[in-house]
Length: 479
Image 1 (spheres, rainbow, N blue to C red):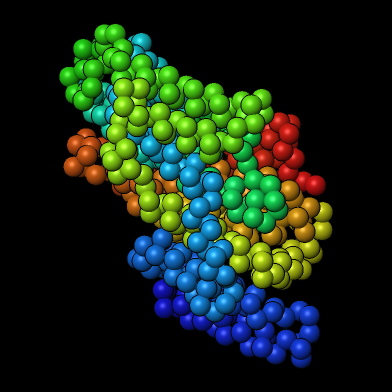
Image 2 (cartoon, rainbow, N blue to C red; image 1 turned 90 degrees about the vertical axis):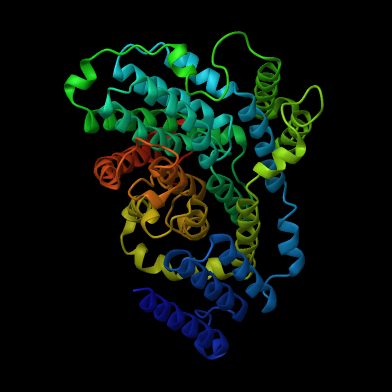
């Protein structure tokens, strides 16, 4: 199957190159040579992401190098992408997150919330709420999963005789971590990639507050819907009716940091830092300080002696440099797609058959985009790679079909939050499926059982938001 895919891509590359070389004879319908080279590199990158075991970042680097060698992408443009303010926003956000995580503040907050549960349903929904809140404390789903594992371990120790609840909780944690990420621009690297690709193509991306406005309602609704699905699918009525009581002492037995008593000085500093940074991000329209600069100031405070929460060497080790390099490479690839006219040519090629649907073309396009984004995790494990492969095409095709490119890109990225079918589909799922990290977790068949219901539910939710909720909130879908 991989060989067949490579042969198909090679044939397309050959056809594109020949048509570009013969462009005077082929007419204006043929791509220019730079556009043909860019499309060829893009197709090969997508094939490598879907069909090989090569690292996603390495594939993106190879694509960027190929474009530089062929003269399509100036080397200065590639190196400039490494200094993009979005890269620095993420670097500083991860430094802040390291300080907050190491302080124990997040674990204490979760424990204080969960101790109020008196029934399994209350426990599950309070857990969902706690995990949703962490979207603003740690800017990566894998980081949030690492933060959540001690909480799950403490809960499992408190529910030692309730095996069904423990298994259901092991599914709930990664599910909510993935679905609630859409609530923040920094919730997943794919969100930043989508915003930057959109800005590269249209000149307008999503800011922190805009993403929060549109994404948080879906994050809350989808997370709690998923919570109910997990609860009903994996626990019996008797399990749900039997009461529970979890105390701070129960949670403290397995907790790596204190969960009761007065806040430590470190926790108070972490709370002030996180609250201040999020407040500054949400009020950008009042003070006009760019989010990247706010994050830089917060990062400096986080690693400063006396007033900080961590040290610079420790924080730097926690930064996911692979993700940042992947982002830089995909930004360069997106620049080539738009700068050479490759994206416009692809758009014209795809619009002709879709236009035959008439007024329904835009609606059909959005539904197909949502469905493909939901299923793409079966072929492309990396969420960031999925955005890099899908969003450029979505942004190009949307205007010609009467669809707002920002709304279509947002819907695609939101749908991509569903990646629960296989343990390899997402890092949080893989972490909670790892017996070395979670001793009483779920089995792969449980994931498949969950995805059969959760997948269609997410399709309906994202479609409902795209066609009705987001337009009412100020992001029209059809133009």
